[in-house]
Length: 599
Image (cartoon, rainbow, N blue to C red):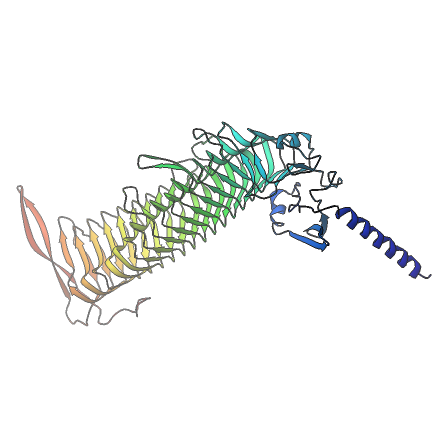
């Protein structure tokens, strides 16, 4: 069969349709509708997030002053032609719903956003042209897309009224490309209120600006919420506050300069999930790739929430960078946490269930804490069980890099501490401090106060600063071994502490003493290297058994035992006598031990 006449016939038909289309579009200049349809399906925000980089194709031909313009959007393998503003009728219905227009110059366009929403059906798109829209409360009670032409110039103005600008009470809603501002009256209202009764599903808020409101977004009873590419700034209270919700993603947002107060009290301004209301529990939260900067009280606060990931954010210049309490299964990783006023990260274990199974990994935690009375520096943990702090950088935190207070089963592993006042200050904690590097921390590399039984400090390298390791008012069973402590004023300082095992450490180049034992007795010091120190160990104690010295290397080979001279305080009939006492290392080593980390 000869197919050439058939092909020619369809070619002619195609050319005719092309000219008809061009003639239709050439009826005067037209303003491009730089917008596209968001697709809301049961796959929710996860599928939508994969289409963030959908591509426009705009093509223009100038023919004697007349403009021909095509607007094409590539969505996966689909090609959708978008109407221009001059079109007389709404676009033809598709499987994705109809388009309704607000503003602009189209003859059938709506003047009010609420009127267009009322006329819409599930699956429709309400497109809003640039302009300032002053509608006291816009209610979205259908599964639609509300789409602004340009987020900087499509403005929803709350006019300082009470309540909210947008109230969303339906599932499968997309809000995109708006500025929402001036919903502000006493701190109780918000630009966007997502309210599920009983529950909303699949909500997207994207490419929006929220400023000069009481709050940015408040949500309750929501499952599958994506907030992405939004700028939420200079609001009076929380930028984003949610309760009783799950599967929350905050992605690629800028959250800055929210909250109010100072000195006597703060109104928090950061991202808050389930703060101060234990009756509403949240789960599965991701906050990623955001700039969270200069917010009052905290940048991020997570409470009574499980399964949380906070990663790849810049969290800086807030009062507190990250706060958590009642957070089983929390991961904080690959963030920059710098220059927060009180502390970079604050963790509490007061709520039920307590914060546990928390991993803080690969963060830059630097220059936090400015010396005020509530400053704790890099990380402050209070009564938090089962915290792993691994592979982080702690640099120039004003008070300390990490302060675990009453926190059992804390593991601090493979971190770097440089130029902090103290590297680690552990109080009433049960920690394992292993394989860390400490450089030039002026007060101490590791400072232990009232430690719990079984604490382990091993395989650390501690260089420069005042004390390498300080142990104060601790009893029963600290294990300090395989550490290399160099170029400190005092290698290891022990104060009012008893029954500890200090073994197989190298203490090198101490400008004062390798060891300082004050009011401490019944400790075992076994097979350590004490090299190039100015003075012998300082020994002073009141009561109790002497310390036991066994097989240490004392700077040079010795044929005789090492005699250590100390002072002991005796009380007789309310009289206090100081007497010289002697402690002896009977079997000193003839050469330094080959201890890991010793050069």
